Length: 235
Image (cartoon, rainbow, N blue to C red):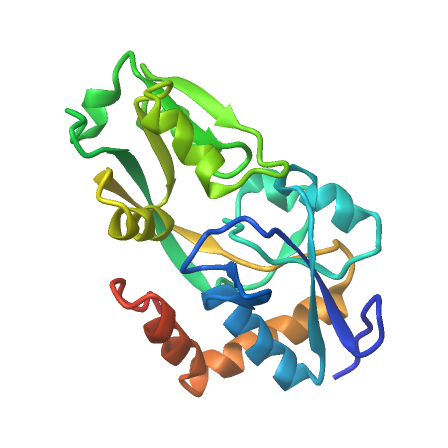
């Protein structure tokens, strides 16, 4: 397959060190989770070595446009806004949104967020907010150099009433800390894909070919079952 990458023999991946387990997280300096596992499987098929570069989420596509990286591959729903910056592969997953609240909170459904403050990671869930919560005040958290505790501390302090984000990520937080509760989920099934610099058709085709092969031979489903045990495989 004829394609080129910025660094020969490597796939340079724009990502983040932000903990979004089970999708992606750092453990003892090693990148773990569903997305890195798929990335390694894709690269193995293409004869490449994955190389991750941690950058602020808000600067992902600016970095991609610089030509110094090959792809953006980190918790990226395919949206019209992002299509202006990148071409996307076929989805490697479909994911729902959820709202996380304190255990004692009275928030149990969308209408309970009327006139409340809802925190969200900047640039991640803004597409659905106004449609789902028309009478809610949104508090975007800057993703630059933010840790998971930085996102949860305002909820603990009741500076916001709830957080909205990827359902799998928030369910993992709930499982680790009884202080928090997933109040409800939204069945959005948003497709997540790999963002490629527009015009790099050869690399886009190669990535799609590898993802299709992983789907056909069952590898993608196997990795999904390994990391995302409480969600059914969407393909």
